[in-house]
Image (cartoon, rainbow, N blue to C red; front, side):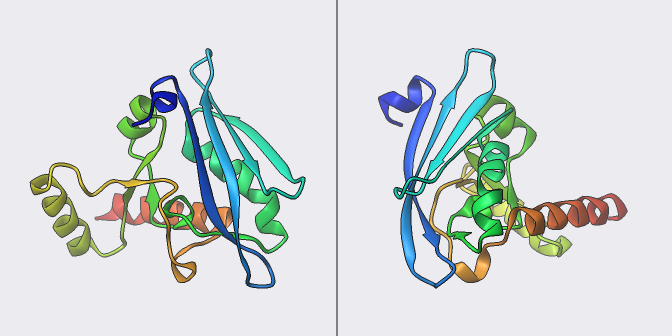
Length: 156
């Protein structure tokens, strides 16, 4: 953890696939506010800038992704994978930087949780870690997956 992160600020570069298929590096900054909320800023390096405030970095990042995604850009990070979102504790205490995968297969969830327990929480992934293009989704797809998963989990 860097000194900036200890002060409540994180800066990172994220890979973004443009509509023509080229990979670009965009800057993302997450800053803790005195109100307990987070400000997430996304910059494409060509004059585009998006800003959102939210209760955690995950939701703020989702908010700033929406407009570029509408133009065909895809964010190649774990935070754009449909099966990843923060646990309530990660969101409330850690700002939503660490995400946990939820799969629709019950056995896979049990197995993954058991392995993570043995490996001391290594099941969490950093929101801006790289992810392959074949695994990422839009904010809308991510939200739909989450709603379906929550409905499925209530039945099981």
